[in-house]
View 1 (spheres, rainbow, N blue to C red):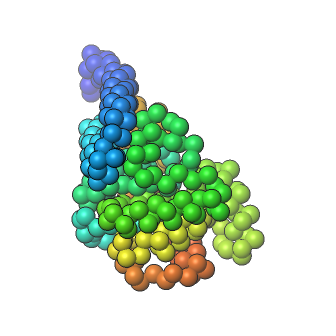
View 2 (view 1 turned 60 degrees about the vertical axis):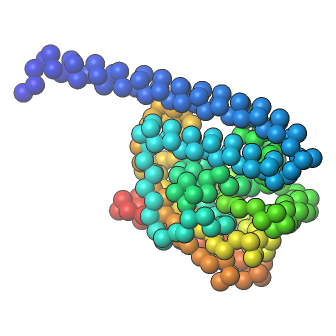
View 3 (view 1 turned 45 degrees about the vertical axis):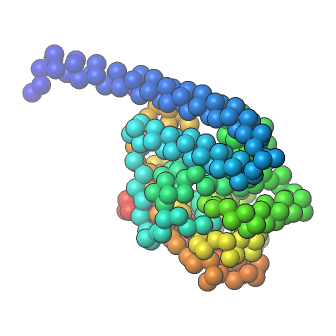
Amino acid sequence: MPSMKNQKASSFLEMMIIPIKFLRGILIFLSLFLFIILINIVQITSILFIPLSKKTFRKINTFLAGSWWSTAEWMMRKSGIKVVISGDELTPRENIILISNHQGMSDIPVLFKLAKEMKQIDHMKWFIKDIIKYVPGIGWGMLFLDGLFLKRNWDKDKHKIEDTFKKFFKNNIPIWLILFPEGTRFRPEKLKLMERIAKSKKLPPLNHVLLPRAKGFTASIQGLRGHCKTVLDATIIYEGSAPTITDLVLGKVSKVHLHVKRFDLEELTNDKNELNHWITQRFYIKDEMIRKFQKNGNP
């Protein structure tokens, strides 16, 4: 049997682990925040290049974005978070449209890992809420990166999306376009609302994801056909409940599973109703995948 002295030493070490992880998390958070504010300052000065060369302006901001995202991905790994990627084999440097389930802010650095492996972390584009553009750091940064800020008014958002896609085509801009079609993070209260919507549409209930909204996805397929070759369907699965930002800071997240299914964009139709059906079915598949993981431990 272990001695009383050894037991006390073990207890002391266990007590020290939490504050050490907390301090490490705080240092990582502060480092990333200060870094991105510095990047914002450089981005503002990059406006001077627009009259001279818009291409140079885009290169500067692409480099800055890739630098911050790569640093965030590296720090995520150093903090002990392991992203286990499974599924289809992917081709690096492809222009893609990626759809994913959305459980929390922690989903975003998980996708950094995938983008970095595919050598496209500096070309990520996001569908994001309009209010985010007023947030220092990430919000301000995305203003310089052709971020698709949406006001939830489709008549207005549609024209903005179409204009941005035309810019991608015209300037042959590499993109990794990321969408969270659920439109919000997965929450029990949101699930109850979606149960009523599913019932009204004569669809079976979902338990681990929400019904997707197809408009942004449909517009992306229609607007980027010929520029993007691939649609990636990513399913993020946590071991347990989705972590909060506090959980990340405290180092409570150790492993995340990311399962990816690849589709050739040309295999998908342009018909709105068929695309709506396709993406809805993909989220029912995600729901079943998460259920099986919780039962068996494999995605």
